[in-house]
Image (cartoon, rainbow, N blue to C red):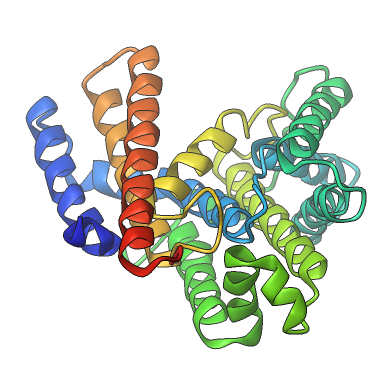
Length: 320
């Protein structure tokens, strides 16, 4: 249990094990092309995983079940703007802003109206998923310029462009924010004990609202990447990302009760989930079994997290 408490070390060992198993399942797994393609696919998972993790970190049963639908809605907003003649780069920026506004709506439903996070974001999940399908009638929006495709298809020094331009910088920014700023410390305190945070002068509702906005913005960045990758805006492009984001967050060490977890853990968890998905696809494993694998990972991660929290409570008398 002491070894498992060091989540980064545990995930490092798990990464090696998963890589070894997947290389046995498929001899093409460790090929350079597959590894680069894997990071290309994993970039969006890492982004939505970080967004989901921050919402969970804020405590009070925080979840963002709408994160995949926000991604789809944002992508369609970008596509509609491009189709209307708006410059593609401006359209991408406006799409990210729209995603942030959708995140703000989630936050207001939870923090101001008082709807439980699960119910509130479940409702917006259905809403943001339905609107793109209604607008586009299920048909992808094309017409993106080829130059825009560099963000999703290009590479820099052999590494996919979205990893260099988006995932790594956002990871560094969030890691600095959560470890070196007042806001980051406030998030942890709010997640551990919101009443104590309130007494310390922290505006709990504002902090949690900010986390939902960040989650929306990260989904918007994911939408930009997907539009550039596909050179089209698919109304269902975000389907399933909410569950992958939740899996990454829990596997990364974020306690579902809040107040516990680190951004590096999310990044490593995203790598593991991507490796498993890629390896099973190369081995032509049925999609149903791929979903089952994610389910086993999620359950296993929850059991480990609960065991660690229980151990800490017995040892220190508090949740840490």
